[in-house]
Length: 149
Image 1 (spheres, helix red, strand yellow):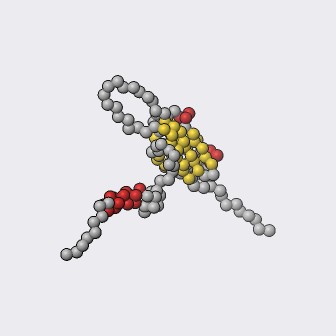
Image 2 (cartoon, rainbow, N blue to C red):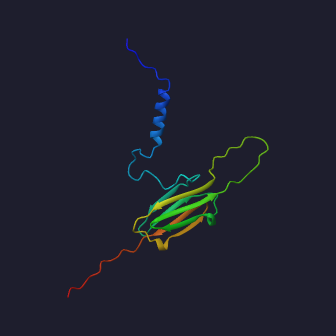
Image 3 (cartoon, helix red, strand yellow):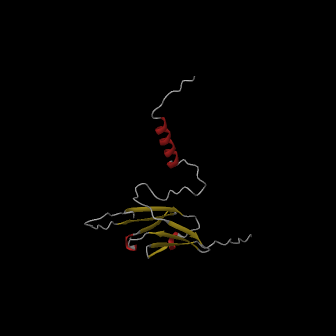
């Protein structure tokens, strides 16, 4: 007969380790799958689609319930930043249950842009709860022929 040491907290410790590994930043994700464009101080993070076209990049962010005037889009040092806040509308309900699933509070997303992006001509518009940011590409610089004398 073998003696087995009893660890009453062993199973709970193992579960905690598994959950920590699942949510750790050191998980092995394929390149481009680790999204660090939202920061910890944000209350929520809008879903964003980014598409590359021949002449520009197009970024679409779902931000329903936020007035486009209240969204701050900035571009500095090759980083596009989108931030704002969705305000909570307080409603009082006398009886029955209430369920709130939409997120409220501030949001903050940052995106590193390639060197081909033209930071001077970035434009944005908001319509029907979708923010669209248009980032034109720089014109390709043609090689210059240098005369040899």
